[in-house]
Length: 299
Image (tube, rainbow, N blue to C red; front, side, top):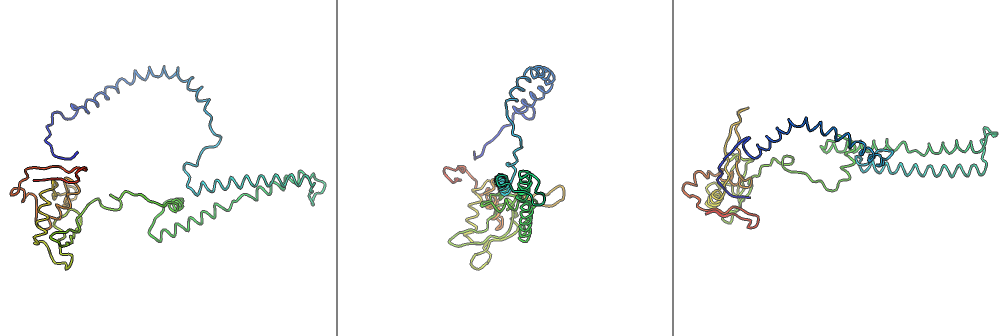
């Protein structure tokens, strides 16, 4: 999928293969009216059959909301169901025992024991409902939000605090979010020495190349010049300065492989440009980079 080629354009616009498909789609739009009329008759015939099939499908009495719930919300819902079942079982046991022992109301001894035990069972069921749990959870999550704000983390929804707390691995796309999507060369090794490269972005006029040990300029170092000159002759990427027509600002834009752009920018910091080197050292042969060889060859 890599390499160079010479292309010859024979058709453009609606005369291409894609353009012919677009024409067919436009022509089919005009025929939709007749097709819709025929389709409506067919739909009238198929409607009773589909209605019979729909009746066979059983729908639950309550909607399923667990798909959009956080782990904490699902846990609280399961806890509420378990507490409800336990409360009903306890109330039934209390009711049966009270009726068996014929417990009577002390304020109204003439009333029936079963009527009094129904009142006791309902009272126990109402008291067993944990209405304070949502309040406690909301306060806890609010405290978590305030703690995260102190660490410069802004949370839009309070439920996200609990979801983020359950996460053990966070996968994020670095380009455009954590970085600018601009690779730059910051260090290089040549002639047995280490060098530091300063500057940001694709601007070759900013920054310099210095020795790592003492910080002196290495722009005229034979090792740096020869290494970057060889690298520039192997690259097919170029960096050009362009002016934005809207605001008039200038910026350097790379054209080509994003991995070769940092090499071109670093070479520009020491005054090496491919347009100056290629006339003296023309390229006669090239083998493109491939994942199997993990290298490219230029002569």
